[in-house]
Image 1: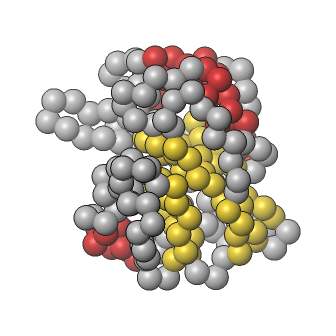
Image 2 (image 1 turned 180 degrees about the vertical axis):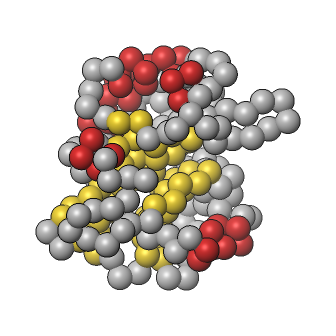
Length: 203
């Protein structure tokens, strides 16, 4: 992402399915791509466990059983505030968020995970996207299927999000390429959304 008043920010999004077991792969990506901000879903961190990544600060939201979970990794040297989110969801969606402070700019980043069997309602997504404000990006595993972002099928979550996108000023950054690969089929369940003024700066 190229913010006109700052250097280019390198943002990385990944579904870890255990950021502990797959820590080596994650660290390799952080180094190889010189990542500034990493949005991680399915961290599988146990509450109270000590988790660290050299060169990064960690903001996290763990699930009680040590599965699911989300985190944001912020490269050392960046000023940021952890955001207090309105997690009044009808389902077990998890989110965490930060406000990154660069010169006079304040950019918001959110990491999200919604389990595949979670039953959501439209208000859940309205609450989520309302927190994006004018300079925000949210990424994660939504487990939402819709042909708008390249899924071969559509589910309830996909319908709900697609309907909301037609009513609010939020940009879907996905290109239609699959984000999850399997032997049977590929799918696009890892989604990234941005406020319009940031979307035009994302490549």
